[in-house]
Image (cartoon, rainbow, N blue to C red; front, side, top):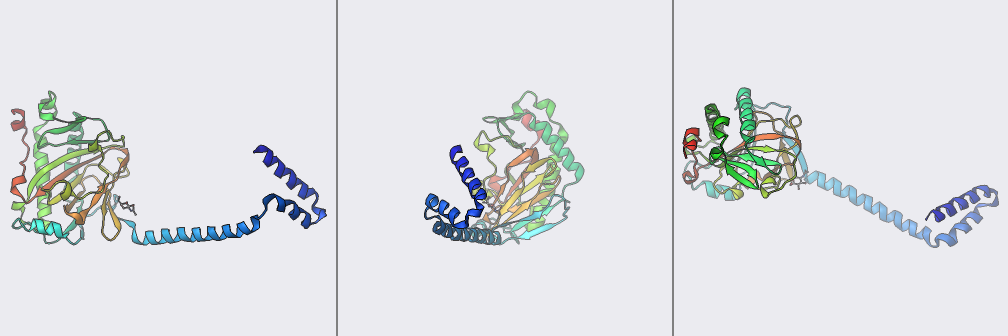
Length: 321
Ligand SMILES: *[C@@H]1O[C@H](CO)[C@@H](O)[C@H](O)[C@H]1NC(C)=O
């Protein structure tokens, strides 16, 4: 290899030094070495040209039909950011079975004004304190105050049965949790125009903490695109309350609606921000993998199916069971 290089250098040197000898000679020297190269070269140039054009075409068309739009940016404070999307047929067919449950519209609403800053701060404090009882192996930890489930090693344990539970919980935790859920429930009823009395909290409703730790169990893979109603049949409305800030407390971790018009619409988490949406395929989505930091949120789910209703958690009941 190095021999070849040297050879070429030598011949270059030669052509330089023998410049006076005429151009014909130097082309004579090259010809036997590379044979039919000149022809080959033109073909290559053409091939390259076509390839470059192709790449431009792909980039152009995919940028036209597949883009990303920020629906709610971290830095913007929204009182009421609504986006309607037609209800999917399967969603409509299903909700219509529950009197009063058919929403006036399908789609999403993002609001930074439903939950106060002090409520969000207190909930974050609660999330940190309670999730510290868990022992997740990967990057996703959950805590469900209704069932008591908390991520622990390969799966979940009942945190109400843990020895430290009595000292970790505060009665005010349950009051706060209930207040916030009720506010979200009212906002869902109001935006989608369904009777609040037929909106029941359902399972799973939980706190989540996401980090960039690699996934170790299937519960850790939260970033796959999905439809809530397909994962949890009882869901009719899904809401999220964010307890930390995108770009400040963590990187990645945006919520992304994957829409039928080939546009991905992102919601950047912001402390106290609530996002709510109908749970059918009109709101197909995923959460980006968190690449740094820690992301806290609460998922609050609603159903119109009373069979799947869950009640507000009360610590005294749980302690005695
Ligand atoms: C939109 O999300 C889908 C699903 O994750 C992904 O395959 C696609 O690349 C995303 N598009 C853009 C423009 O980010």
